Length: 370
Image 1 (tube, one colour):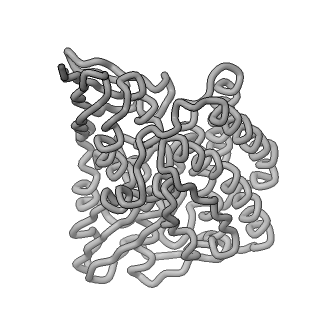
Image 2 (image 1 turned 90 degrees about the vertical axis):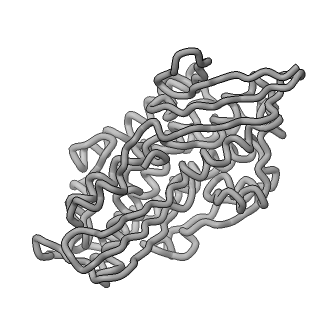
Image 3 (image 1 turned 180 degrees about the vertical axis):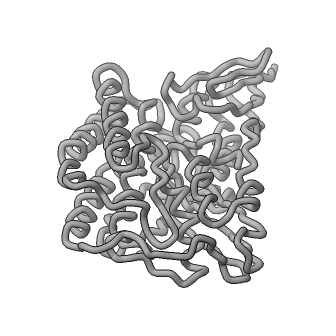
């Protein structure tokens, strides 16, 4: 006989719901989603209905009452695990609309910071795999990444570093050369996490999302690469990726094991890209910003930009009427796509594997409840 189970995932819970935790510091703890599960007689999920929206952030509407400078601070906050990617999406859209080209040094540093943000995001989600000494080292490394960002920007999680035409400030003296011990720690963690994943079979064959499912739900990033789809926007060469990109090998299984494996592989490729971008930055002197008027006006029309955020393609559609504020801003976020596919991924999963499925489809509530 089938039964229905009401669940919540996040730091909060609803009355009468079973609370599912992925760890006290896992990114899923910030916010709340609701999942209603239909379980068959074998305690496997036959249907799942996922409800998000409890964050009520309304970021897209708030953009419309902010000018093209002040909106950057708001964009920094919808995916707090990869805040720099949020800033970058809006700023690149404005710059493309205005036909602005930032100084070369700013472009290289933006590339480095985008991969730095990817390390912070991926490590946080991969905390679900780790325990004991590896988990302690993982969170120590995440904190070290935040402390390094604090040394540059004065903020640990929300850098607020992007500006239209470049960056708010250049990297402090010796900041770039001080990265080596931290990058070495990430590389060692990548090897340890790979060993932990190889030592278990519980993710294998679980929550398969093949190439057709990825295309149907608009999935990209690590989820698509785990199913054999190479949709990486970095391969187009935007920013300085034409010189630094190191593609990760795709996998074909499309299951939770493959998705977590791609995340681990990307730790290594991001470390490599940061090292190359750092060398380029040290060889590229000059300013990191362009002087612009206090009140910017974006040319009238529709303007779009896509970039590769840690969990996939993030895009911005900006509609301008030629004034100092946008008429419309719409965001395409990978978190929303991943949550859209979560119900499909849960179908067929054993009841005791629900957390494993969710851990393989990362999301940030703010990025979904935009």
